[in-house]
Every structure is written in C-alpha cells, then in structure tokens.
Length: 632
Image (cartoon, rainbow, N blue to C red):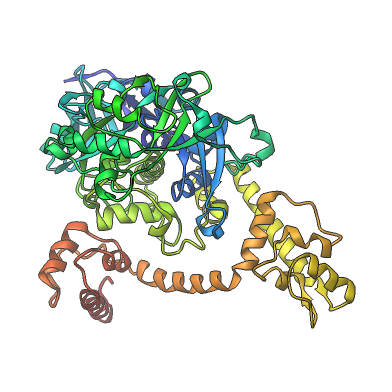
C-alpha cells in the first residue's frame, strides 16, 4: 500500500472537478476543512461541455439559491457572461428565470483561479480508481498511480465520465466529453461496494464556424438592456458590458426528410444505445419522430465565447453519422454553407439510483460517502452545482458533529431537486423546472437571499457581508411597504386624472397606495405620479415591494399550505429500523420504506408505492409508541 499524500491525509476528498465538484470542494474548504479536489484533467475544471449558458427556466432559481448559500456559480457567471436575458417576463414573478450566455473558456479560467487560490484546498490532477472503506465508513481513495489518499469523507462528482462511451452513427469509442479521458475503473469499485449502476445518455449538437452562417436569414436575439446579476452581491450597473447577439432559425422539411431516411443509422433507433436519454432535451431525431406533423423546429445559434468563432447550434443535438449530420445541418435556414468545427455526438455513462442516498446526499450504509451531480441521475450544470454545494455542507456537518443541513421542498428549489432524486428516484436524466415546485410562488428567484442566506450564515458559509446585505434588503422592503400603507389617496379630481393616466378606474373612496398597487394593471414604478416623496430605491427592492404587495393574499395561502407541509416534514421516523414489523402496511410500502429509509413522515408520503392508507398506519404506529413513552 502506497500512502504519499501528507501523513495525516485530508478531511474531504472530492472526486471530479466539474460544477458539482467545484462547489463541494469550495464549500468544505471555506468551512475550514482540509480539502483535496481531484480532476482527471485540470483543463476540464468547471467545463461547459454542452450548452454555453447558465440558468434558464427553473435552473436560474437554482443558481440564485447557490449564490444565496455562499456558493460560487453565480459570482463566476457574473464575471464571464456575454449575454443576459430574463425569461418568462410576460408571466408572473414565480416563473421569471435568468439565463445568460457564458464565455466557455473564461468561465473555466475564472473558476480555476478561484479554486487555486482558495485556502485549505488542494487541486490535483489524478484519476481515482477505488474507494476504500473500513467498518462501513470511508477511509481513503486509491489513484491510478497506486497512491492512496486517506480521507475522512469522500464526495463523488464524476459527471458523465464513468465508462463514458461516445456515439455517432455506427462509430463508438470510449471517451469523456470533448474527447477527454473517461474514467474506466471507478465504476467497478462502486459495484464491488454493492452500489448498482445504470446507464444514462445525453448528447450535444455540432459546433460550427461563425463565418459560414448567413445571419440575415435568421432572427436576432439580443440581450436585455438592463443587466440583472445572478449574485446578490453584485449590482447590475457594476457588471454591465457590451453583449453579443444570439440568433433564432428553423429546420426545414428537407431536414426532416434526411433524418427519416437515415433514422436506422442513429444509435438511438438502431438498438445500440443502452442508456436512457433526457426527455426535456431531446435530439433532433427524437423531435422529428415525436412530432411527425411538424416540418420545422427551432434552432438557436449561440456564441461559445468572445475569442472564438465556434457557434453552438442549440436544439439540434444528434447521434447520426458525421456525413449525415453535415447534410442535415445544411438544410437549416441560414446554414446552407455551414462548416463544421466539432460534430454532434451522444454520450453514455454510468450513474447510480439516488434513492440509496439520504437527503444529505450521503450513502445510507457507508458513512461519509457522498454523491453529487450527474452521477445521481440529474442533468445540467446548475443541478450538479446545487448538489455539490449541499454535499459539501453536509460532509462538513458530519465531520464536525453538527446537525445535517437539509432544505425541504418548501425551503428551496434545491430542496425539491434533492427530494425528487432521493425520494422518488428518476428513470431518465432529471431536469429542474418550475412546475416541479409546489410552492413556487414563495420560492421565487428574486427572494432566494431572503429565504436562505441566514441559514448559510449560521453554518459559516455565507459571509458577514452577504448576510448584512440581505438584512439591509429586507429592512428596505419592509420600510417601503410600511410607508406605502400610510399614504392615503382620496377621490379628488386631481387624483382621478392621474388614475386615467395609469389606465385604472377612478377612486370612489379613500385608499392607501399599498392597496392601490394590488390592482392588476398597476405597477409600483407607475404610481410615482401619485407619490412625490418616493425614495430612489434599487430595482431589486422595487421588484420585491411590488411582488410582496400584489401577491400578498396568495402568498398568505401558500404559507398556510407550507405550515401543514412542515407538520409532516418535522415528524421524524428515521429511528424505525424495519417496516415489516409494523402491522397493516402493504408489501410494496414495506419494501419501498425499507429501501429509501425516509427521515420524515412527509418524505415517506412522497415515495411511489406508499399510499395514504400506509401513511395512516405509520401515524397510528407513532401515536402508539408515543403513548407508551417510547421514541416517536
């Protein structure tokens, strides 16, 4: 046995330096633990191997929450974005989601710089091949060189690298994203630990040369004039910069014909692919098959960075052979003379069934072994980063003897994400969407700091500066709401003339400005003509004031629902060792409850196969134990 990494080893060893690995390692290091981050290639740290953007519907909420908790993704993309857009602005604030284009190279470089300069954190290029345990607990990790790194905790963040297989028509070869080296041995180590592996698949479109495209035939997609940062530490005016354009175009009937003529050459349809692909990010072959009546599909042309002419063709991922890909892309409007720089491809990889994990992302049976990111069956950079951050925090809690840090479904989108993965499981790459959150009116992206920063500050991850900035925001919002409630408007002719300007009905009785803002057609900014002494407030304060006033009744109802939810969520059942000993449970419920090991009655109620009748049986069991004075 070779031990060559410091005699005392490390507190936390993170395998994989993608988005999950970086957030996990930064979290534990910032919390004071000696941390080692292992990357198969330092050039792939925080890589964006697929789409060159961060955020989007639902995903933008995750990035804001990561930032509110003291993570790095929001700060990093604020430094490296090249276009910024707020999505869904025609709808209510609950589904507003920020999405920005990233400069791929700069994103990697800036994150690498942060990691390299982080105190308590060592970044090392190495390949982990075996996870070592003693008496059901992590003891170390073995590298391909034979070196063994002793560690108190291990966080596995391997992304799409485990036995990764590239698929392009009849061509197949072992490789990670961007033709990087795959991890071929770690899967075997996991299986020896009786961790069952599954095969998932994802894909990416071609990268094409900018100069070969005719943008005059496409629709320009500019960025927003007003920049809204991802990080609550930043102001829009401070990160504003010249933005690049993206472009919208469409496939044609000819595209469809070429795909259908060559469909049997796609590994997806020839039976070669074993992995399950993402439902919400289908290949162009899938789109054509699923929607046979449509002759055209959207394609977004997105720059990969400021210092490259590579353009990402969003929406046209494919596993067809290269020669067919070229013919197909040439039928897309404005791409008739397209030149390929990198072909589209699919990639298969090993992942686990996350129902073997606790909500801390720790393995149920192996102490201090955590998993985060795409190895848990999720898809996307944002989902990975959120899991990495939570795994890092909980590794810290385990090592230092603190209570687990768990966000439930009413706390954050991160809580929804992790609960869905470990409680419900997933049979396909999981993607976060606003529709997955039951309490999305209170889990808005604009109030992530108000919801989460205090929790992170108490742990020690959110800085004092971040915490004080959140308190200032909270105080400013409450102060302005209180001021508006004291301004009473009366039905004077002068006032009603201003009502006409605001395109709202005239006043018949006195009303506070606070109540007037509740009218659907009234905006907070528009009422300035009625409010001569209005303070000059930042955009985020104005938005918060308007949202809290307009949706006050709905938010109150949702808070009542959350209160009921918390009652079940706070009823702990993690002490129940064997559900087969509880009389009256269905056989399926016994099997599922023993497998997933829910820590609360609320979590148990969300397990597929556990019925309301089964929950009532558990409730009766808990009440019986309580009356007997036993642990319940």
